[in-house]
Length: 527
Image (spheres, rainbow, N blue to C red):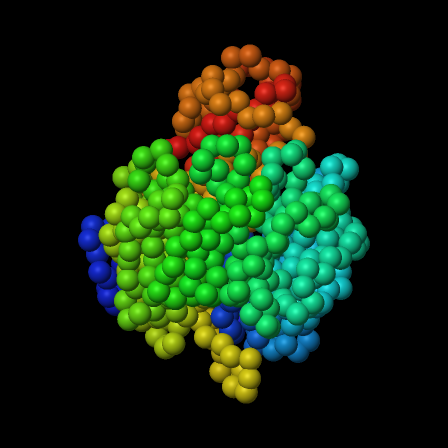
């Protein structure tokens, strides 16, 4: 393994199509022996107040890496496969404190070697390992049955959904959705019918063109509804409440070129949009033009498309050389104009940012030229944060090239950290945005709170200033408060507070939730 390298210079070698003065730079890179067909996740694994990034690599490497996000140095690596070229750690990691010991763990699922593994987030040591049937499905976590204990869900080959104890890795139940399929979508966890019980939604990759989307009760596993799609569903479901009826709409794409908006209550179709080709990566949902309404951003073959919440086209962007984005798009304000931007990588090795309000190009960065070898696929959804606390937002992604056979030894890859702008974020720190894989910035439910928590207060009067920078003031504080990250991966308990002022200077920019007594309130860190 080659060591990480630094390059704090503007990339004059890159060809940019820049409509603004914003020019990205490479901060560091980390070489691998193959590409990453999975995605990454970030959190403070070692408790030093700085983020680490976890991702896995495909055949001819087979490793799982935890890198210090500020400089690319290795915190730990894990190689579960012998030989390494049989490794397929191609599933998005899940980072969470699964056993409530105050320390973060990393959950990795694998397709080649059928195992799901829980690793100590600080050291990379194995805590537990569970046998599976092989999985391409990103794991999710929640207390599905309301017993106060967390469960981990992911899909598997032969059409199964597997539920494991988050604390011990023991098998709690298996559910075969369709034996003539793979379940490659992440199980999206959401209360589809607003009955107070968490449910889960999965799609199938069938071998007889009878693909469907399924919703199940999370406690009883009763099938709530089935929606025939008749086209492969590869990545998961996105969630929003477009009509403000307290019940979610589900957005899912298919290889049949269609994107569906589905009523979560009964599985009926509200609207359909047909693109120019396969919709392989998950759509993302956010208010990209600040009009108070949520929009849907999807990739259909060579186009990135923004739709209104009724399925009408707002703008289209055609990718250069008819390339395409396979793994996913993220949303963040990277140029400081208060509009969410659309960021993704392509199979042509381009890293692209679009202005969310109109789809114009902010930059197009030729990563393949920097690497110096072609092809260089960015088969990886990026992460966004100020990873080194220098006041500039960064993006992390992995690219490369790889095949399963027969030239496996010719595989190659590289992870990149790129400075992208002085915008306001917010952070996007895991695949499909949060631990329940909802791919949405428009669904008013925090994935970090217990499922029986009280409703979130809508009035912004419990804490101020809001947005905050370095501190918040709690006029009517209790002896103990609890703050949760919006991504659901971190929480902080504060007790015996001597004064109303609470230090939040070590928090990254983004959305947080604070629990004071029996009330929960939102606040924003914005610097």
